[in-house]
Amino acid sequence: MNQDAEIIAELKREPAAELRRLQKKPYEWKVEHALDVIREFVEHEGENGVYVSFSGGKDSLVLLHLVRSIYPEVPAVFANTGIEFPEQVKFVHSFPNVTEVHPIKHFPKIIKEDGIVYPSKEVAMYVRDAKKGCRYAVNGFKGLDTEGKENLYKARFKKWAYLIDCGVKISPDCCELMKEKPLRDYEEKNCKSPIIGTRAEESFRRAVGWMKSGCNSFNGKRYKSTPLSLWLESDVLRYIDYNGIKMSPMYIYGGMKRTGCMFCPVPIAYGDYTNIEYARIHYPKIYATMMIKHGLKRMLELAQENRQLSLF
Image (cartoon, rainbow, N blue to C red; front, side, top):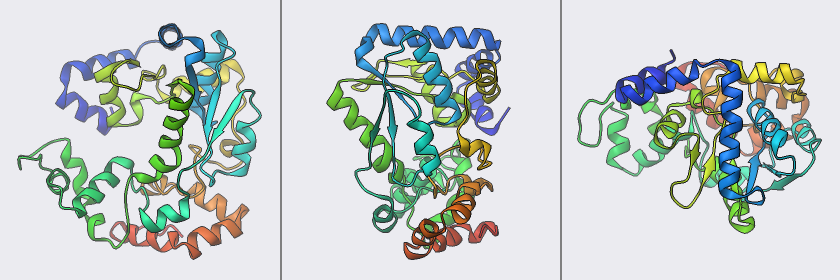
């Protein structure tokens, strides 16, 4: 069991136990369950009222295959941040019926004005708000809740407390400005709701999201479907292999564990900097512009000082 699952089990024993039980279900059950989730969502929203959020990564490849196996005309939408690898953009557009959306603010300006997402969106939000003196964030980095009491979930943030005064601008706004807001704008303009390839296994927040809403969420203004919530990575890889799905060249030739922006620092926090190394070798001019001219290299070095990792 990973750390997130242990925390969930402690905080919400029954829902967490149910999540773990379902995650252990056979692969065949998960495939049929995902198809049922998709059918329920499409029947609720209408076939013209949904789209697949598509990045070309492993999970979204499986999701698109599942959706189009029963609804072949459902469109896919790709959030092109402007710092995607060209190979990935080409790969995404090798699929039919894919629409691009674009950032409302570009990466160099985000680095300068807002800061980078590091080591995750959740921690970055705490760092930003702790600098503003928000009690929940300040206490969180001490392992305390808003009332000042010891909190098992908040204890996870203690090791990142050094980021508050590390000299780096850190915020969760990067993904919001380059991906999430453009996708929401697309949804509003086209009256569509998203089908998303996230899995509960990936993070605490996604696990809690499943426990609150299940795979189909019809709460609030934004309805969404996450048919792969109960899948493990092994299920994703098995589906890809069984169905002969072509993988992104970034996995095959780039050696990456996940696709994404050239300069996303999130993997670096966990010792994986294949994306930036690939950019350095294959796109040296873009690398020099982002890392040197716009100061990303220095920012990441500062953020890493307390962890004593040599990444460059």
